[in-house]
Amino acid sequence: MYTYKMQQVPPNISIESKGQKGNEAASYLETVVNEQARDGWEFHRVDPIGVQVRPGCLASLFGHKTEQSTYYVITFRRLAE
Image (cartoon, rainbow, N blue to C red; front, side):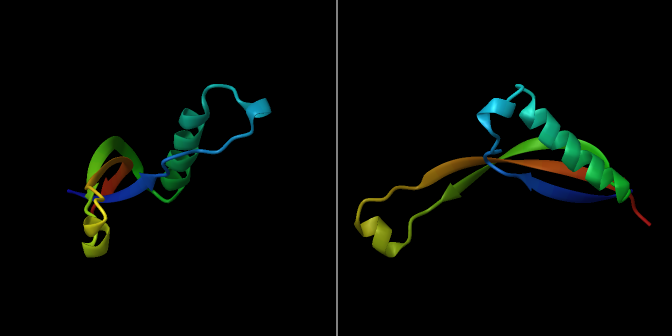
């Protein structure tokens, strides 16, 4: 049996153009995974999760439609105690 922990990845990672190396997303994930590993969490996987945001009553009156967004979540696990 495992206990699971999820952490949402921010939609954008900001970097300075002069420091760009092309591996920023991998570097970000590596940092997050290593931080969690220090607390005993094992990296399990990354999953996309679709979210629909429906407009409220007033927004609907002004013609706003349901918006679809995709987020990414990192899943960690460790043996249950």
